[in-house]
Length: 163
Image (cartoon, rainbow, N blue to C red):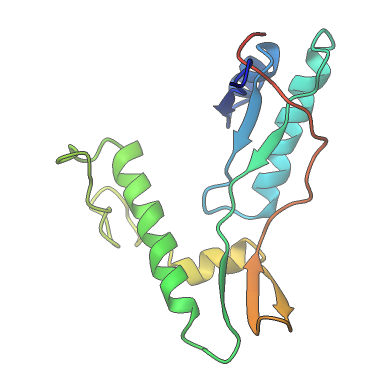
């Protein structure tokens, strides 16, 4: 049995980064549907929290949530499944996070593409993917293309609930 369980704290504000680092927890962030500038901003908040807490002996890890989908290059419509799936994910998150409806049996319907609370339609995922500056990496061995927008990984360490 693992003695110490790693604890991960979702962070977006400077205060939530500071809380996580001060308590020796790992940090997980997501730029939501924003681009690389948001990833950089979140990493800067993490690095500031690290600098503000020199008493923390072991550097917490940081994890960035980015959606990735793999499909065969010869399937031009292969990207449709990831586009629709990630769009539904963010529309469902919008409904949940915005307290726009009550869950039914633990599930929620995604926000509509055009919401009465918004003056403009929700962004289409294809433009969001462009905003994330996705890169493509062909894999000759498998005949697939990987699309991703993941940043370079930060220094690694472990964090546990016993701190």
